[in-house]
Amino acid sequence: KASDALKTQIAGNATTSAKTHDHDILGFTSLSIVISDGAIDYLKLQNCLEESIIKVYPDILVRYKGTLWSKDGTKDVQIIMQGVFGHVEFSHRKDIVSDSDRISTLVFIGSIDRPIDGEKFVTLRQFLLQVTKNCKIPSS
Image (cartoon, rainbow, N blue to C red; front, side, top):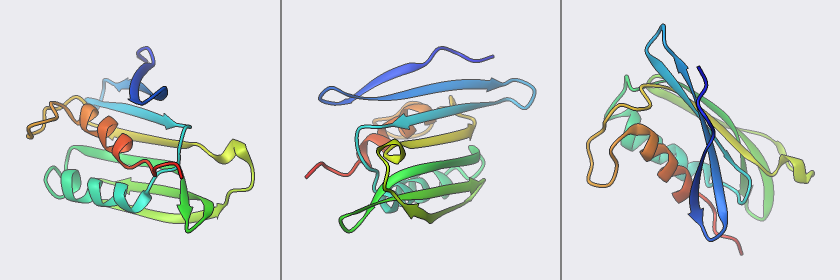
């Protein structure tokens, strides 16, 4: 069953929309995050996922994927994110020439509402929402 879309304030008047979907049979939930108000530093995102989640909780995320609006120097690029359990890859897809491609969509499938250790975060969902916010490239 799909739940209602969530809106999380991330900076000024910018918002990240997040939507969840339950996979009751397998016991997993999906979290979809869409960011349209700024590019994502995909290397920072990769590091956060690998160091904070994949190495510490290798079984918590079953699948993750997405297309990211990012930067290569001054050029806007689209990056593909693919991951399964403890492995994640980011690859350059194309240079962005259209405004419609200036959007990031990330999907995480796993134990999204599982509590995780840490002082600031209670669940993986809260951690992923915060990480995507922190990985935005500041506007110049």
